[in-house]
View: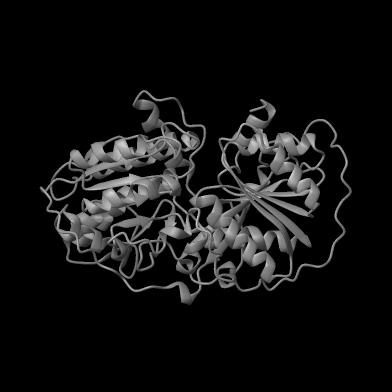
Length: 458
């Protein structure tokens, strides 16, 4: 059972759409954020000393999006389904629920609209709110058949989309590494609730796209088989494909079986996403689930929406996508970084840190969340001694860590993906690892894979 520490974290930030200028490599700063209720007391920075061998990551904290508590029964069904298709057993279920829900919401919107053409996008927000509650595709479909309006609450939790097609609320686990360099089981139960303030609410938009449907819904995927988010690929594919199997078992959509075409997104260092998007567009898909990376989404969103195709991400969090000109065809059920950034910053404040340094990968995700963390910390009176965006493909992170050593902050925020293990190894070797300084991470690196890669020297 998860133990909830409810916080009105959303009240700490301005509207999600207001921080968009800070991400994706833009030079402008994000709008100022409101201060947390807790003020940071002055604290003396711990002395820098070489850490003892073993458990080098012990004490590092960080957030990861956490949807509704998912039953073991559902997780077992997804796992069994995935293995039955000839795949290896799932090692985790990150974003499996969100990918499952993305397919269900799309299918219900097509059923409600009566067309798999572009106009089904106008029904997506309504499927998530202000109707008769339902939790399965079959039950929601029955409500539509009876002339009603379903309000789908999915595996990943109540969606309650804003008018721009993203959640107004989010849940996050505050994870912590133990002496074995792995996430402690207890910290998985530490759930923090966050809500966007009323100022973030925007009016419902409608698409101008006129793409016609052919009466049979076809969903494509743009998810990471390769690249630095490949560890998310298997659970996302599993959740998506399991949803399609469940939808078809319940009679499909518009009286037809839902078709599926799988695609790899790669990452921003390759052109794989663009090639996959071109192929899926040529195959006349009606909706694409993905990408997982906000940076990847930003490389293909224009061509996908220009084709009148719905794009629905289970994992994008960049604030830049909150007000992106997508002709109301882009949706996501992972909350924007405005919420997560406030959660991370609030934890730093609560822990009594008087100063912090932010290290982030240089992409839409890293720059966006770094800007939010910086603004919330400064508004709370915490000195931000530096913000450094780095190239995740760099051969060495010695210079970045040297900057942190010189700044001597109480806390270090690391916004990274799998390269985070290499940064932490340099930090430990430089005597400023999590045993010496207070380190905080975000969902890109807050998993046991970080500890495994660290132990393996990756």
